[in-house]
Image (cartoon, rainbow, N blue to C red):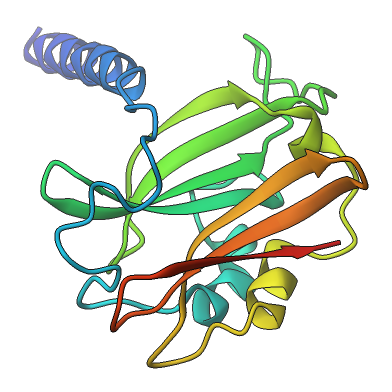
Amino acid sequence: MRVRGIQMIALGAAVTVGLTSCTFAGSIPEPGPLGADYPGTCLPNPFLWASDWLEGFTSESDAVGGAVVGLRLEYIDDRWLWRVRSHDTGTDFWGERLDDSTAGREALMDVATHDVVVSRSVTLTPAETSGQSLSAYGVAVESGEEWPSPVIIELARIEDEAGSAWRVTLCDTETNEQSVRVFR
């Protein structure tokens, strides 16, 4: 009887945690203007340059389900976070993988630790689902990001008159001036 009671308590705790996670997962705020919420600088401390950690990130992090298609530095509730968007084939109710090219994952993760704060499933944009010649890591390396400046604050897949591309926004760490480069 005692074991059954402990099992019921554990089940109740698991359901409570699951419901809390589901409720919290839906509360990822929509992004505002890039850099508008930064507390005076575009360089959080401690901070790793995107070009330093993106290479192995897809295979090593719970924040992503597949190839990274977006990355954005944000300051939310007094915390520096990366908003990461990625492909995610997803699973159905029974855990079977789905073949859906628009299925994606969006996660907010701590800048210093890369711990996932919250994540949710999203539908990717046409630009995010189109083929890409450069990976997020490749674009980060090509962008010109280097210590001490400039630093990447956004990598985004976009569609323009010439087709799909990467838009990279860099920030000068001394002046907080932003510059944009496009890579195809």
